[in-house]
Amino acid sequence: FYLYLGKLTPQFFCEKIFGVGRLTDVDENLLDLPELDNQDSERLRTFIHHLNAAKSHNVPVKIIRDDMKQRMLFINFLIDDRTESSFSYYEFLQHLKTQIK
Image 1 (spheres, rainbow, N blue to C red):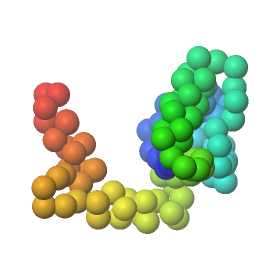
Image 2: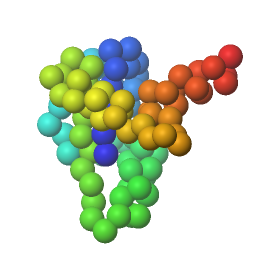
Image 3: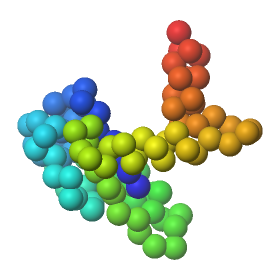
Image 4: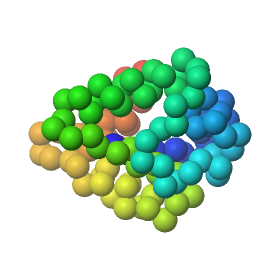
C-alpha cells in the first residue's frame, strides 16, 4: 500500500500518525505505521490491517513524500491506471472535485 504525503499534509496528521512534528521528519523507509497511543493512529492502522486481511500475505505500507525522488514514479502509476471504461485515479479525483462543488 502506498501512503502519499503531499506538501500540504497538516502538521497534526504527522504528529498523530507518525509521531513527528514536520512532514520532512517522516521516515520514508517505514514499512509499517508506528503504533501511537491515539485514536487516529489506531483507526488508520486498523484500516490497513483490514485491507491486508483480504490478501494472502501482508503488504507493507510504502511512504511517498512529496519531496522524494520516487514521487514521479508513484504519480505515473496513478496516471497509467486508466482504462477505456474507467477513470484514472487523477481523473477520479477531478470528477469528485466537480461533484462536490
